[in-house]
Length: 220
Image (cartoon, rainbow, N blue to C red; front, top):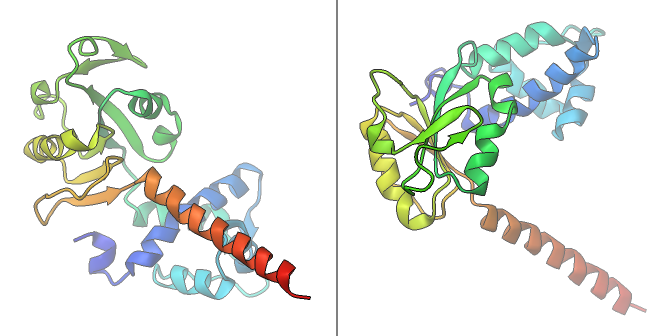
């Protein structure tokens, strides 16, 4: 169980903290020393009352008439998210998505360091992607290259065997872009990003808007 959950921070609040941190980091980079709850809420797409409640779980309360200290609040959220250290990441699957993630500089700025890349294709193993040599996952030695986070960008059929191997390597957190549910031990956290599902949800809302417009146009 995550530290935040043990301390009583709701999972929904944890899910919003990265957005608060992103907005605060942007404000601080532009020299802003403080921000009101209303402005921070608008920047992150939540209600100001919800934002204040979320931050109260961290013991952070704004000063009336001043708001929140941007740098201090960003540091507090970073500590809550466990970003005071770099988490070593292995990306498995060197297709287009895997290569894009391996080359994405935004991971390092958010507390994640890609230390290993893996694939099963013999024509890919041994090649270099953004300075890292692609290995077979089973050849990664956790004593020499410890990893905490595994990112799966393989086809669905390969995802479960990859997850099993990641668990063997000592990975305790998995981000999967492969469709389907992974079976892992209880002490391993899995987050799933299904692009097809997200697009279908967008399609639903688009369809509802189309129906509303059609209904409205039909009313005399």
